[in-house]
Image (cartoon, rainbow, N blue to C red; front, side, top):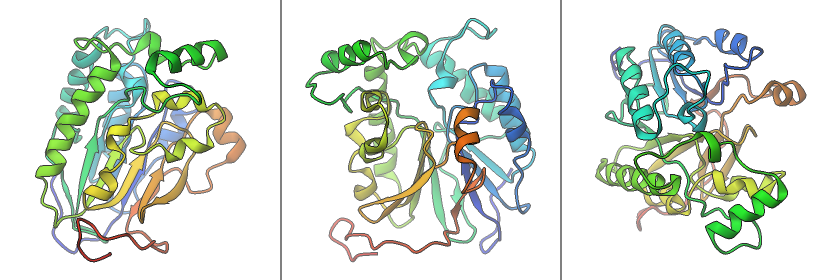
Amino acid sequence: MSDHASGSRGSLFAVSDLHIGIADNRPLTESLRPESDEDWLIVAGDVAERAEDVEWALRLLAGRFSRVLWTPGNHELWTVNRDPLQLRGRERYEHLVEVCRSIGVSTPQDPYPLWPGPGGPVAVAPVFLLYDYSFRAPGTATKEESLAYAHETGVVCTDEYLLHPDPYPGRDDWCRARVAETERRLAAHDPAIPLVIAGHWPLVRDPMNVLKYPEFAQWCGTELTADWHRRFNVAAVVYGHLHIPRTTWYDGVRFEEVSIGYPREWRERGHPKGLLRRILPYDGVPVARPPLNGGPAR
């Protein structure tokens, strides 16, 4: 795969939470197709739990779209008994990165490719950040209190049992390492070139305000990224995980939740925005953004 010439046509699409390990979701993935030969696709995590299913889906999509970019969700990082690949933690992630590279799919470990089509040039930055329990449950002040509250209510993410942080002591330690590495790369990026930041977990806590079970927020991100959309020249943020697909604006920056989710969810709500979300070109009405680093509003 190669970047297209400046002025090319096409769209930058995004999707997440394909969950193809569920039988009724696999046909949805099989139905995903570009609108043109120049379309790109961001896959923002939770493709599947088994490594061979992740590879199958990304290989399928890489054969259809001009470029595919992937970042892991929590489900890809689970080590489940039914998966022949029993790698844990960072080794599992690094294995999936190598699988992606072997089939031409960009990962958070690769240079940010430049989208040259309508709405560009924009650098597309897939990011892998995890969470550090700083989005704590209401009325709690520490990670320990927040986790205890979740266990009391019975709302506990399966990550606690299947997402191993090896070699880090905890998932929050792995998160802090990923945030530090990603922040360095974003800070080194040319600020004149806008970014589409695409990750599985939201960069800010605001999207969790609509959660039915607010204690689940502690598995949904980190306060460490709360200012990234203001600090860096960000054209849009893409995320999934919440299974609440929608478009929101924070500080004049567009946030797109692009998940498909579980059958019980998409059967109830349908797919009002389509299975694929067009990130660029954006055909809606932009919201004015405050000045960036003291510069003019844009």
